[in-house]
Length: 439
Image (cartoon, rainbow, N blue to C red; front, side, top):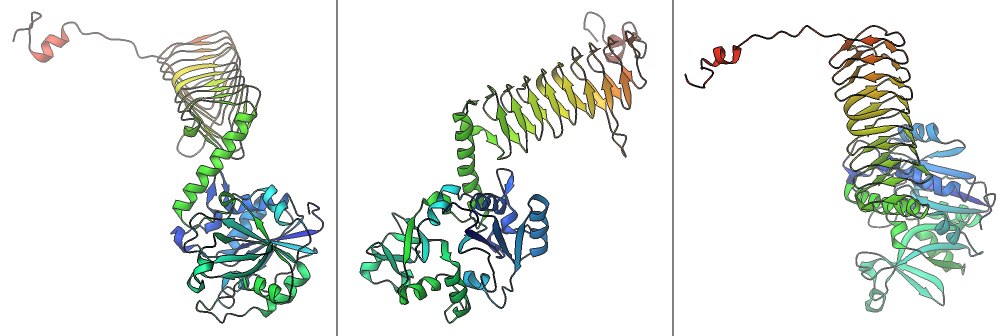
C-alpha cells in the first residue's frame, strides 16, 4: 500500500525516557546529526501525507523543534497520567485515511521498505514480529496457519510457548475503523495499570479478524531507551551512511573510523581518509579530505584539507589547498593555499593568494566579529596578524611578522615590525661565563 493518500501514520513520542538520564527529551537525542524522532518522521513521509505525533513529556519543546524543520505535521497532546501506556497514547487520536500505521518515535532505524511491507495486503491488522535466537524476556507471538493468534507474556507462557522465538516488534498497521472501535475499549486492568496497544490484537482475534505477522529485521526495529542504545543505533546508522556513499563512488580509508552526518552530500570523486568527520549539511565535491580532519556545515569543491585541518560552519573552499593545523571559519576561499598553522575567520580570500604559517585573522574585538578581505595574488608572510576590519587589495606582499591594522592598496608591500636590536656578548654577561664557557 504505497499510496500516501490511503495511509495515515501516528508516531508515539509521549514517553519521559528516564533511562536516558538527560534533560533533553529522549526523542530529540541525535543520531548522525538528526534527532531520532526526525528519522522516524522522514520514514513516515515516504509513505504518508497524514502524520500525527503524539506528545506529552516536554511536549511544547518537541513540537517547536518539529515545526522548525517540518510542515503539515499534526500533533496530539496526550494526558499520559490519566492514560499511561502505548494504548493510552492512542486515546483520542484521529487520523484521516482508511489505514493507520503506528510507529514509535524512538525507532530511528526504520526504513521505507519495512513500512511498505507493514502496510501491504488487506488484513485487518499487520503486526511486526521478529525472530530472535534468544527471546528471553520478551512476550511471545503465537502464530497458527500464518496468522497471529495471541501474544503471551513470558511469565504466562507454558513450556511449548516458551520455545517460540517470535516476538512483537511493536509496530502495527491497522484498519482505521477497527482502531477507532478498539481504542475506546482498552482498559488498564493489569499489574502495571497501563493501557496496552497489544490488547487490540486480542480483540481482533476474538472477533475472528485477520492479524497478519510481518517479519522484520531486528536492526530496524531497535528502540533507543538509553545512551548505550543511542551509541548502538549511531553505529548502525553510520554503517548505512558510509555504505551508501561508498556505493556512490566515495573512497574511504578505514571507513569504520569515519563519521558522516546524514545531511552531508558528496559529488564527483571524493576521498575521505581515516578519522575524518563530516558534520552538518556539508557538501563535498571532487575533494580530498585527509586524515583526522573535520568539516562542519560547509562546502568544499576541487579542494584538499588536512591532515588535521578544520573547516567550521558557513565556509566555502573552491580550488583551495588547506594543510595541517589550519582552521577556517565562516570564510570563502577561492584558489588559495594555506599550508599550515593558520586561522582564517570571517574572511574572503581570492585566487592566487598564499597564507603563510602562523597567520591569524583577528576577527573578534570581544564584542563583535569583523571581516577580512584579501584580494588576488596576495602573499601573506608567516606570523602575520590581520586586524579586522581590513582589506588587502590585489597583488600585495605582506612581510613576515607584520601586524596589519589598515587597508593595503594594490601592488604594495606592507611591513609592520619593531626594529631589531642586538646586544653584543649579552649571553656571557647574563650567565656570568666567558666565551670559553668558564665561570
